Image 1 (cartoon, rainbow, N blue to C red):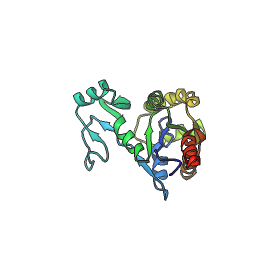
Image 2: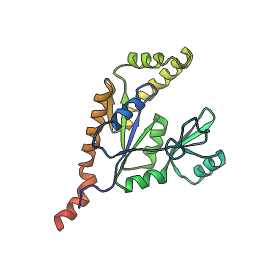
Image 3: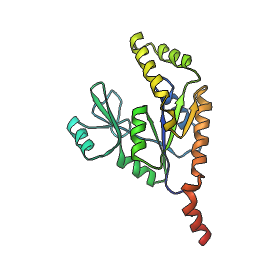
Image 4: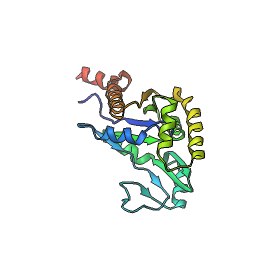
Length: 205
């Protein structure tokens, strides 16, 4: 019998521009892990090459709104006219299989998940400095300076919510940040409150 049978829900979150997607990719590129990425549900149309069930679960708006009514999401939000959400049943099924389920979501979504789950691990990703964040947002080159400024101001407010998370990881280097997150995951599996009941069973055998 193993001490840990159920997987962990790992929430990687932080303000826009901190590099959540880049760090998550580096994490998944590491060897010998049991990580799976949580596929979201969305009402937006599939883009070229996107596969239903792999990139997103694509549904129509009435279906999504019915799922909201039935409390089917760990978190959901509307962005640029389309809904996005994390399906609760899919996440639970993966956790029951012993998988490490990774959510890469915005701060608002992470706080929704915090209200609905007791056993998740919340990691707040931050830049090495405010200046570095502003430079990252600006260097994208895909948004107006006004929108960049709005994102930066929103990020400054979100930094104040870091106390709601379990860990803070500085993304000074992508691979270093991924290493720190993997170390957190391994440490969480050894946490007494997660393993004590299995340990007691082992000792009784």
